[in-house]
Image (cartoon, rainbow, N blue to C red; front, side):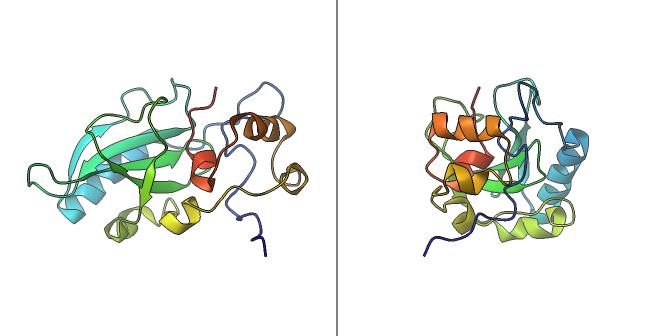
Length: 170
């Protein structure tokens, strides 16, 4: 049986609004940045970078890059926050570079250590939620998303929920 559309799929989550207008920005970037440093301090992580150009690119999210170990070669983690709906995800960062539109989709992961710092402000989506297949029809989406968002989904053909929530669509 097909699962219902997750409740966190809300208008504007794709980065597209009704008509040609983008949805309003809902993320307080300064607060997100401060939370990243607070989370890093609480988890003995290092903030390697925080989005150098928030809200000026063709993506619907902002990000920070954290490293959870001082050991050379230790994995780094992207913290991704949707700009239009306050949702946070963690993704493996195989290279110490910001997300790029030509890169493969994110490899999402769970980092429970971040819950204390972020949960009061941003729901942290679990890997299993982000990797759910995108299987809903246009008619099922019509009650939650604008026609422009549905058009963009049809055009970009995302395979997972995570690809809808954190995208580089223009």
